[in-house]
Amino acid sequence: MLGADPAGNVKGIALKAASAFAAFTLAFASMAIICGPYASIADIGDWERVSSGGFGQGGGAAAAAPLAEYKGKVFCAAAAESGALVFRFDDPGWSQVNDPGFGNPDNTGITSMASFGGFLYAGTMNMDGCEVWRYDGASWSKVVGSGAGAGAPGPGFDKAGNIAVLSMETFEGRLYMGTGNLRYSILPFSVWSDGAEIWSTDGSGWAKEASAGFGDARNAAVTLLRSLGGSLYAGTARIDITSAIVGSDFQVTVEGAGCELRRKAEGGWEAAVVPGFGRPSNAAVTAASSFGGDLFLGTANGGGMVRFNYDLSTGQIVIKEVQWHSDGCCVYRFDGVQAVEVVSGGFGSTSNAAVTAAATVAASDAPHGEVMAMALGRVEGAWGAEVEAMAPVKAYNGEHWYRGAEDGFGNAGNSAVVAMLAFGDSVYAGTANAAEGCEVWRGSPPPRPVPLITSVEPGKAGIGSRLTIRGWDFGDEQEG
Picture 1: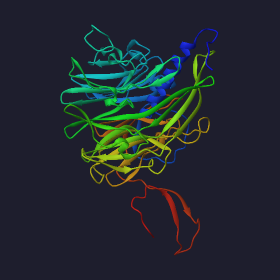
Picture 2: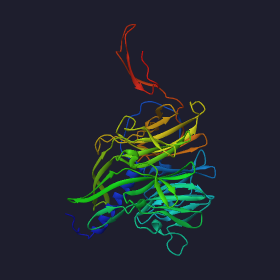
Picture 3: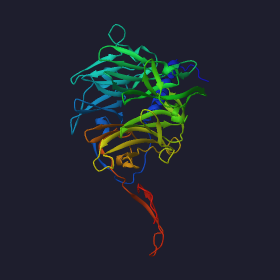
Picture 4: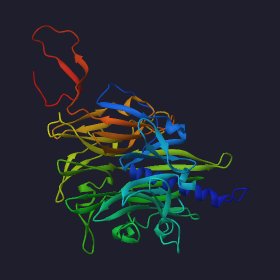
């Protein structure tokens, strides 16, 4: 049972535990997986590293996300313990353009950025309520989080539990923002969601566009906002949450409940597809990129459990156990009318639990003149030393799916690719790297599959003998 500790810190323990859970759940929604090593096998694509070591912060800046373009420059945020950072790429170097956390260390992460109306907007993750800041090229000003009387909504858009701005998109002269909503009680320990919200601005005033998870509180987050064919779409993380105290530990379970894709319409947001695209285990719409005039949507699939406690002697959250299960991420091609499943089962491995980022660039040598890069979140093994989390990148040229980059871009510490941005003729990709610090890579996947032979059996054979050649990315199946 949980009782009062000698220092009377029950409330602090519960608050920290709830905060840890919230971070875990939002990581689930966005699938920014950060854990152990992997082994790479080949150099693939045309990529160069343009930032390493967490922008000089080392492991204190563990994730390079999100990425955005503003006034012809690439900007990248980095989550940091002392407060989230924003950097401008001045090629070949980077310049920090904000104070950590915009002066508030509780702004631990920046979860979305977008250019609008001559400004760069940045939405934060903050357990006391998300904030929105905007940059004019010289200085930042707070536009959400100032409170009543300041001409802008207060923390969390004046709503308890809106702890992050997870998505942004410009549509018909307004900038739309989607939130992640999580709440908790201290005693008894419980965590739940009141449902995500969508807000919009024209640069001066604000309007609430959706609330309470579109009437279903299981829509705990609007993880994606994208426009297509004159319509605005919102993708959600739709999850079931249970929480309990097990002995002296806190335990939280999150299960996918069939993510939603909603379309803005007169009078509300209508369902654009069936929940989960027909698969209830699809928990969240986590990435999107346009290709061939359609929108390719990637999902996070499955659910998991985390059990943790608070170490009074160190003040640290101690994770005791993590379990995860997935049927593998899926990809859907959506033309505004129907969504067609083009990938299921995690590209052949259920360990590929989520699509974490996607971007498309022109490629003159590709069959259809463009190529899409799509990053996957992979988890293998049991929690602990045996866990392997890799950072695979797939490519699509309109005919084939194949490897778009070496896993982790050749760095064993890059456990995930958490952001992608198409800018000019390149894809910029930000990684998660808890040990060395995040990295940013620039380049493009190959326009066609790059075959890799891993084995030939038998090793010796005479003329006319049949050989078995194993490997990846051979293109069309062939007999011979």
